[in-house]
Amino acid sequence: MYKVEIDRETDGRWIAEVTDLPGVMAYGESREEALRRVQALSLRVLAERLENGELLPDVESVFAIVA
Image (cartoon, rainbow, N blue to C red; front, side, top):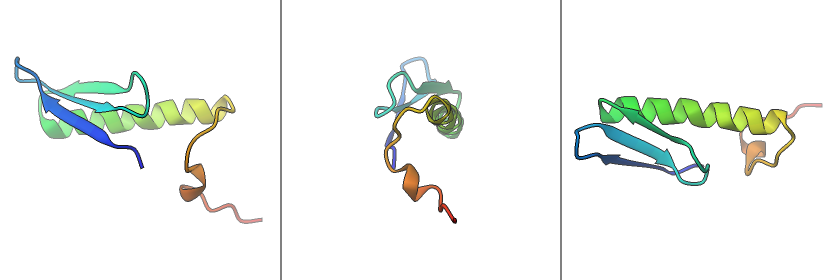
């Protein structure tokens, strides 16, 4: 499970970051928008890593491989 840190910037925007995925951060006008954006970006980053054969922690808990 990836932890998302969310904070409000001084200009009012929200920023969300997944610290276990370097560079994965997103801004939003609301807390919910920042969270949605960072979750979507996280999924894209994980998909790219999977396609490139990079190791992903706990991917076994996401998929049930049946013969």
